[in-house]
Length: 242
Ligand SMILES: Nc1ncnc2c1ncn2[C@@H]1O[C@H](COP(=O)(O)OP(=O)(O)O)[C@@H](O)[C@H]1O
Ligand SMILES: [Mg+2]
Image (cartoon, rainbow, N blue to C red; front, top):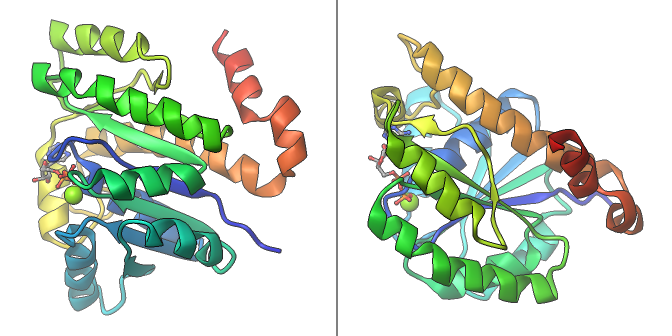
């Protein structure tokens, strides 16, 4: 049976770029010819609203979007993953019930983090949640990255160090910088890849990130669960990193 990998974008903090990354990842997959499901797990419905705007502007968004919250995220995702080639979940900010439910079924959690003090403090409860989830979902991968970061500055290095200290989080060492193109694109119902005039820096930062994410999830779609346990992408990536 077909079984898409599920990618979630989540954090216990709001305003960190969850929806921005989730919709850009969904469109990336759609542009690469995948049949994509975008799940809006936030009761505020921003990903759905974006998708509606996109449909109004382009005629069709290029992917399917649904809203799911709380425990339904878990039960529905188990079925929906057999019907799509790629599933991306924008997990809400405040509702940890949705985040907990998502963490039990997803293959990878992406954690956008703003390099700011309060956001760093929220990493501890998030890390606890992740450790707990890994007891049920032992294959869960968690990739944290700095989003809306300053182009340069000590903050990024400090934030990277704090993320690196969290046992449940793997740090993706290429921050996505705060760039107007992300906002402008969203307001136009577009991904940063489609928005014109194109912001090449924003595109290349996002591409580096999406490549890494889908190199991983592309792998797991094609290899068996048992194989993944012994010599899965985790080991492979660790070998590449060392
Ligand atoms: N890399 C970025 N550069 C500039 N603005 C960004 C970036 N990422 C997100 N934003 C903006 O920050 C705000 C919050 O992002 P959003 O994706 O809605 O966060 P969340 O879903 O975590 O609440 C939005 O206005 C969005 O356009
Ligand atoms: Mg959001």
